[in-house]
Amino acid sequence: MLEEIKSEHVEVFAERYDQLYAAARSLANNDPGEARDLVHDALIEFVHHSPDLQKVNNIDGYLYTLIRNLVKAKKRRMNVHPIYELSIVNYNSAETGLAEVINWHYNPQPL
Image: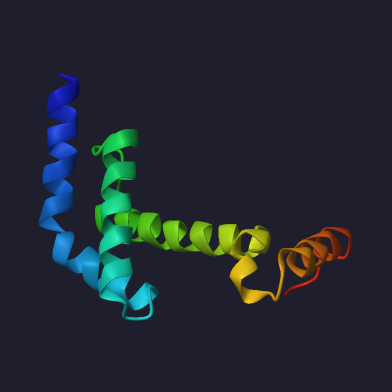
């Protein structure tokens, strides 16, 4: 039974793949690789959660919103944790880089 539900969700998603890819591409600033990743992440989420398709009034809108929310979540993660974007290679020494990390921790402002 569970396999049938998941199979049905994959089928519904596959029917809309081209539309979803086009939407993801526009949300990803026309980056085909990022768009492909977004669509595949959306497929995983859609199949994992397996919403009741009988209760979803607008499946196209649901899937578009799913992709849009994945984009928003990625942007939030990038904004919340810019410390992970620091690369010690960009600094003259590890000491300078660590000082910058400590300064950022006590004085959190956009880098």
